[in-house]
Image 1: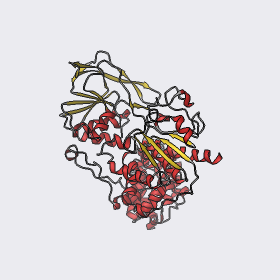
Image 2: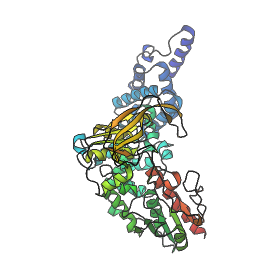
Image 3: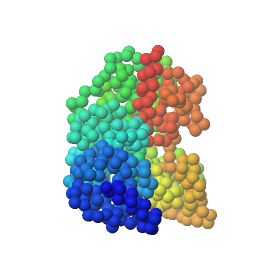
Image 4: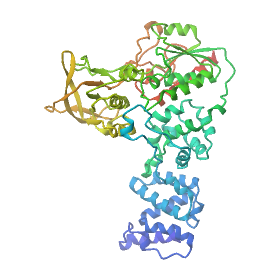
Length: 560
């Protein structure tokens, strides 16, 4: 009857000029049925066109208008949201419709209305407290908070989050388990992807959250990164027994103990291979362990997760630099397969006058020395150049070491900034000022020590290959800033000078290792992934490459 009445109104709109955007409630007669009255309340909240759209979508989703709203289940709600995103182009209208439906579901007493609740915030140390030390800033969810957040998941039929995640982590499945309080089961599921949930639960760049369908209906995405941490924090890890396959009798060497190397070693060990990891550093974990500050990723988290690999029998040869102590060709002769998973830890230079002055330093070595206890104090005015997470880490670390003023200079706008938005917010909350659309063009010194920085204002031009608009200098906009230290955080490149012509491994024109779709290099039996292949990338992409390479190495060795 209601659909018929809507059809009549649409017809009248064309004949007599009735406004089809007028609220449906102004045309509809009162209803006697309390169940029909539930749906008819949408007429007070939506236009006629919006109501017609809702009606058609509900019907296609398998929900009849004369059904009690208490009967709407997760499956129907997921279909409704998915179809709404497909059918309605306006994000604002989608948001209006979802909020109207949420209101009706709440009034009916249907608990699935909670799926449209706001994102559960995570508590953090107050800015005035946290900038005085290196305590972890984010405090983590309580178990109840983690369960409540997981219950927001729509468990999409075609989950965008899984597609967006480089390792294709089973996010809806994990959320279902967390929502039921089955944390150990969620942890066991997670171990099929990688053993580093505590790490990704703190530093992952959240491709998945950016893809979450909640964004499309005007709501905050699911806190997927935080939920990884819930699993790591509350699972009884001692009760989980990893299933190792029988020994294959074959040996694999891994070069680099960062995310790519760790995950390759993990999956190969599970498949019965004897794995040895070589790293030039004296600690395991690559940049995860060496450079990311304690306030963002405590060292004990990485160490606990590395211990999983040690229990699997993975050996670590630390202080062994490939190219100095052993060559790739040596490894290829000694082992049945080799995986190169070194990170991008060679800092880029700006190439401007004064870059070699005392006081102009690179961010990664600075962060390493701080974490290693070699640098305990910094004073005066500090400028950090760059817009990524390393720049934020360097600025926040400088504050904690006693700098009187810390500022960041970035040549693009906030929208182009590659740093995690949460990190940017934390940085500003702690008192760091970010100067956008400017860049240094010269460092000026006295007696070999930097004292001033000559800069120029920028404007954004046409988009470059990465999709971000190119910064262009504005003539005549030069200005001077006084400085005591300048920390450069403009990016890193992989350091691959250990690869020699006799190794038979071809590099790309960008200086990265050339691989095929199976992560195999041009030398038989040698594979590569992570920053060594991609250039500077993210931890989750490196974890994904490690897993994929391990699968390819397994297939290769099984075929021999």
